[in-house]
Image 1 (spheres, rainbow, N blue to C red):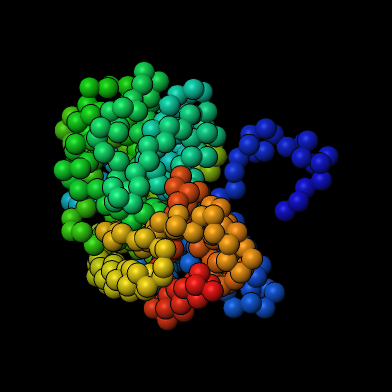
Image 2 (image 1 turned 90 degrees about the horizontal axis):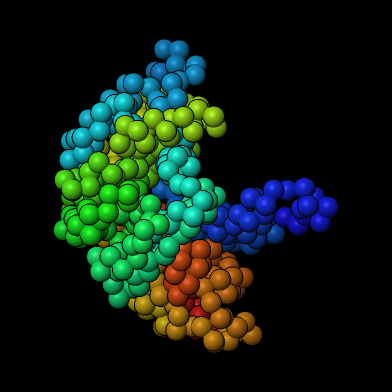
Length: 402
């Protein structure tokens, strides 16, 4: 949207300095093309293409019938927080009491709550790259200074302990990463996580934000949580939510487990912004955590099958280098071989040019790696039907070999 200069002058420096979410921007560009009559395949958003399982929807309907339509406590319904506490113990070897859990309107709000609660201007936050698009801007919005640690495709997009050790300064306040990772799909093993934790153990001022929202979409075996490391467990904030593993994106339910003083601070922040999350949604989410994981496992199996299909199809596209991600529902191919080339009169200098070209020429929407701190790559979501994936990658191949 183009704004009049007089209006821009009225906006805060904060909002003018804030970058728009690249995934949301690309999704809007795809919608605009569709409205012009083009057949656009969008592989840009991180949203499962499955419906919320029936037993969860039924729990929400029952909650509505039972009168759960009122305000909730800021940190969440006790029933849901107890279910989260049980889930952490059962699945993650994490011991968070219900009082240490804060339920928010999506995991994104949990990340924002923590950043606003913990960071002062000038505090450094080590962010593993590639990173989810909002990490960088949320940290900056809270006054923090992002310090980017990059790991390329040859490292399976995973930061090494020696990299972490070299980035720590006396200003480091927080380390932030996700596993399974958005956008790369990489999954840190327990051994890899504990090796990172070993480097942090002696630095008592440093806390860790572990984003585990893709926990249930894991093709490598049992999920591991860095908060299970005994040396730093009291300095880890574990963030998760209902959107990915239970296909509940529109329900907007995220949560954190944290040291009590951090949980209290985050509830204080949230109390001045949104207060508590939806009441009947939390009732349904408690049922999801305690109930049947069969639909979740079926969804994960479907994603694993699609991953194989996508990797096979991309291997036939010249100049596209792809690893084999172990989680989430993305591939993050390296396409730097195309930089400096001109195809159909369009010169590609970076990942933004590459994705713009694919949208214009192939009518396929994907997201530039620059948004994730890795300009040599692009993110393709395979949360789509096999037919759409075949069609989309066929179009990409045709556009790149024209």
